[in-house]
Length: 70
Image (cartoon, rainbow, N blue to C red; front, side, top):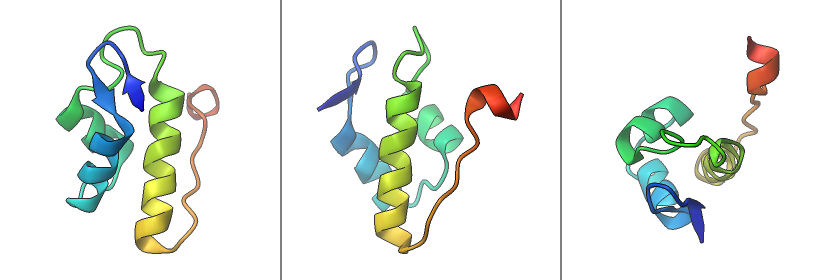
């Protein structure tokens, strides 16, 4: 499924990045160019990354929503 339509990034590409050792939203965004246009995909991309990190590491990953982090 496409996560970032603007840059044609799929959930599979994000999962592959996590499997290859990318372990943060920022690193994956840089590598795959996610959320660099309209930004509408940011929440879904964060969700996919978090779920994949949980599966890979077997631990809970807590995220601070962007609106709270400011």
